[in-house]
Length: 126
View 1 (cartoon, rainbow, N blue to C red):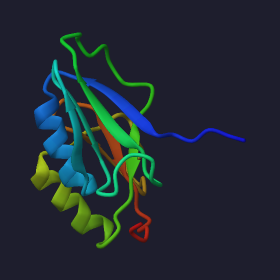
View 2 (cartoon, helix red, strand yellow):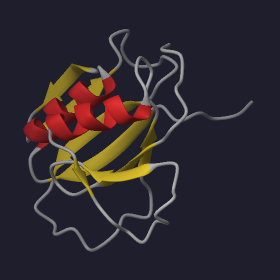
View 3 (cartoon, rainbow, N blue to C red):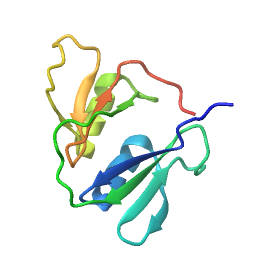
View 4 (tube, helix red, strand yellow):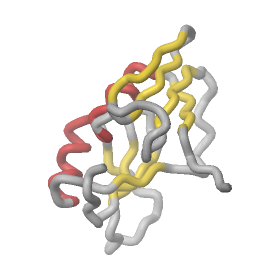
């Protein structure tokens, strides 16, 4: 028997802002809300499906540089260029972390500066 990723936990200054952003990016919904600013978002079918949920925890700790783990996303219903425009309109911003100019991916940051990559290959929606 093996494990699989069921949740990603992200400490952040404003769970509300990041919940809205990542729900827009991933077509997720709010699944649960706990006291103290903790919000769980995930696929419409809820926890335990093929995709992990994201648990956003309010934290006032400063961000200490580049994260050692980041999220990669793939477009499901449009090409990479159109998806890049959609993500930028949702509040993402392009960032340069030293990736090659000819890279097949785009490095972006969410509203709190957490880096993620938009990959080129289009995936079928689940």
